[in-house]
Length: 231
Image 1 (spheres, rainbow, N blue to C red):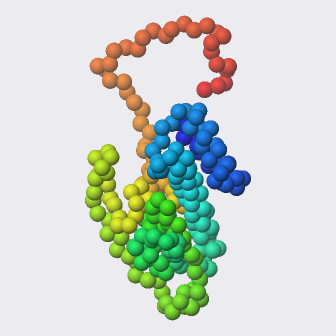
Image 2: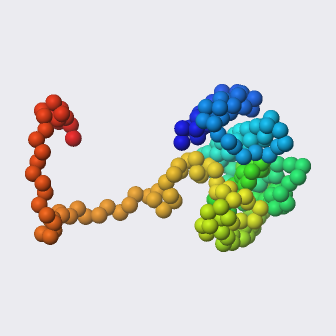
Image 3: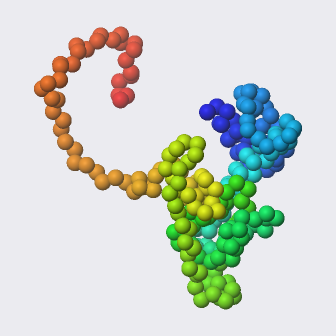
């Protein structure tokens, strides 16, 4: 937990101050040395392994942070009123995921449920983006309305590492089938608990007669008691 907190602080420094990948790599070296972390990475040399692992951590966090900020901008009520449509934009990667490439130019309403799953990034190294469009821009594309929502085709699978059942989506990496902006804004509260629970009528509890009596109070020194008035 302490190591993750240190990485979190290093990423936050890079995000806040714009210190870049090389400065993060120096922070990475200090954290690895402090905790003796034996990390998994690709590469034939230690330097190549370090470069690969730091790039994955840095780019993943920077990209998700950027897209979470994009999402917050686009759901601003004033922006949403003027630009109620979102267009999926492929990153132009040299070796693209074919499904991500097929989604390029797809226009859906900003409120379409598909964005709960396919709002990018949709995998490790995914650089896809979303562009907000006005009705005039939609018409300029030759569209009278949004495109049909894609059938994301969620299917049941099993996580090979844990054996737990899960729902997977084609061309979306494991663990990326969510909207990073929604997750950032909503935090860790499950969707079902975001509305207050219905209050329950207060009831006086009567001790069960089968329970043994409480033990006698234990005398406590006056100095150990809380000041008067504190709960």
